[in-house]
Amino acid sequence: MPDNKVQLAVIVNGQPTVVDANVNTPLETIIPRALEQTGNTGQPPENWELRDAQGTLLDTSKKIASFDFPPDVRLFLNLKAGVGGLA
Amino acid sequence: MTVAPQLVQSADPEVSRTKFDHEIADFRALGPQYTARGWFLVEAEFPHVFVVLAAPQLRPAPLVTGVTFDYSDYDLQPPSVRLVNPFTREPWKGDELPTTLRRRSQGGPMVIPGLQLPPGAAMPMLVQEQPLMQAYPDGIPFLCIAGVREYHEHPAHSGDVWELHRPAGAGRLVRILEVIDTYGIRPLNGYNINLTPQIAGFTQGETPE
Image: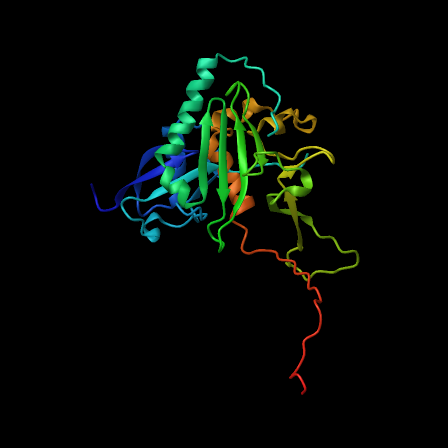
């Protein structure tokens, strides 16, 4: 695999998948791919949020390389709360 | 323990059960990761799931709340979700909730009559906090987000139907736990302690001969 390629394990709403990514692109580029691979349709990528294993929200505008992810990293992609709390 | 009214199973029970089993299998496959975050899957027997959420960032780490899920009729219908006492599994009443899942959101521009802003200056924006746990005054609170049965059954949300959210997995176990954790558990950073001093008598210096 070329040096700029990496495979990232992404857990989409609890369902795992592995996404091929380029480390020189923003982290947000993996979101549409992870959604497509897990068949999560109906909500655009901006309605999802990506967290690390500790639950910390990740800045997806940063390049993948800048996170220095270990090989066994797992990222957690979940649908945002959306509109709510207005009953 | 309060027994919730039985929900009607309209979907093929085998379909609901298979989807339920997937939810539980996916959770258990990453069980150690969720445990490290304070999520404990205590019981899972179709259609019910009972999860306890702790706050590992606090010392000592408390069990903050339990969460019960009812996946009856899933995913023709979204799951029913309740925050409950983790020891008795009784749903919290409004004034008992250990956390109301407050979310900060940007309101409209803050218009101050008579205030002249310099050219190019941005209008100050209002910031508001909205609890995601909602209830009628005498009712049991419910998690007011799309993907939760109580949200979609509420008359105020008749225009936001479950079918719009189902394809994105809005009712999935991990997704709903993530929302509860994000707004109800992770923001906790200490204990709110009330001390009530009581006078038990006097202290005395050296006793005279």
